[in-house]
Amino acid sequence: RDSLYMNDKKNSDFPIPDIITIESAKKIFLFCDGNYYKIREFLGDRYEEFRSVTDKDRLQEKWASEECERVLKKISHGDISDYGGDFRYIGTLAEHWISNGELLHPALLTDAWKKIIVNSKDIARIGASEKYLSRFSVADTESKRKILPLLDMFKNYMKFLTKDQLWAIGLYGGRDEFQNLCKTLRRQVNENSTIENNSFHFTRTSDAYLDIIADSLMKKWNSTDTVKELTSSMNCLFGVENERYYLSGVSSATLNGDPRSFDIMEFVAVCKNEKQAYLFRCRLNADGKYNITEYDSEIKSLIPIFEEAVEMYRNRIEWKKFTEEQGLSHWFNEFEDRRTEYLSRFPKVYRDVYARIPDCSIKDTLIYMVDTAEETCGEYGGSPEYFSPPATDEEIAEWESSHNISIPDDYKEFLKFANGVTMPDSSEFFGLSSLGSCIKYLKDEEWDNYCDAGSFIGDGTMLCFDDNGDFYEWQDGEMSCLGSFNDAVRRICDLSM
Image 1: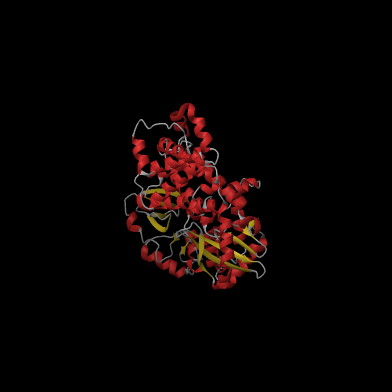
Image 2: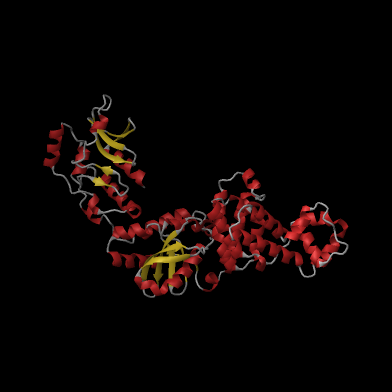
């Protein structure tokens, strides 16, 4: 406010003018902080006279907008000395007077928030502008799109605030009201987006797209484990498409209910006519949009189109809500089934290992072990080399003789299949070179008759066997019986699933 008006406001007996003109009405408006109730209390019976002057050209709305703009500019220029009070002030102005989306100054608001985040590292009290934010329901789609990333950031922060803390920062409607605002704006962006209506739209992923992805990527890399690892988290249920292209998320971030929480996301795009699939990576920029930063050289000319598809994908209705509307209340279970079906389109990583499984007493156990490696290599990566070549009877007998330890018969059968195995999740079944290497940890009167045969979980847990051929889980000095080698394999494999 100008210095003259500030002097007037400090004077407790600020006089009501004999005739309320536009100039005096503005002074009254500013004197009362734009608060409708304060103005009525201050003017009493003359409030209608004030309204008759200001309603004609919607002057209160104009003044409120000017005040909001002034405060936002002040913050944007670096003055955040009282940003909590400033946002409560513009919230009050918005609540009483602002109704036109054109008066919301979305660019200034975004700049002000960024300035606060950079200079104060404190975003909590920005929530006091909730009433101002609600006016975004009448803003244009592009303004909503720009503001959503910041709203989502505040929404995530508010998860950790108590009700009293929310009240202290001016969020009297609480966490739910603010979250509902975010959901409403996102839905409006989806409904009004030209991207959705005129170009890309949501679709269920067809088998044809999965086949193109599997065939195309296998031809490029000729490595089943690489392709499975890169695409195992792909959303096999939904994507976006237009007449020529289909796009879906690959990284696990794209399956999250709120993809705006991530700086980087990965996608796979299908060029339907050419029957080619391409992986690319996007990074969130300062404007709140994702730009493609890493891509195959063949798609350079398609980047603007794919960025448009990414924008559509990330502004989607949350998967849970979207799938419920489609009658898919258990969409995650369906996703898991679809994912298994999708990964089955690739040749098996461990196909050579399957072929060498011997016809022995533990054949089913060995198949279960290799099945587990095959199912988890998409998440952890894998290689047939993780299953070492078999040990011979002579090598096994020599080890027993030199260590004076009898290896259980079922473990000998395992060694004659693979002389050591590292599972994709890094669990190990020891071969002869490592068998008994951790006996020193078991040199205790109570555990003296045990030999270590593997490791799992990743926190020092060991697989052991005793003189009777039973297998045990050793952890932190405690020994728990697992039973046979078959039981031990299933215990370790089930932990990796």
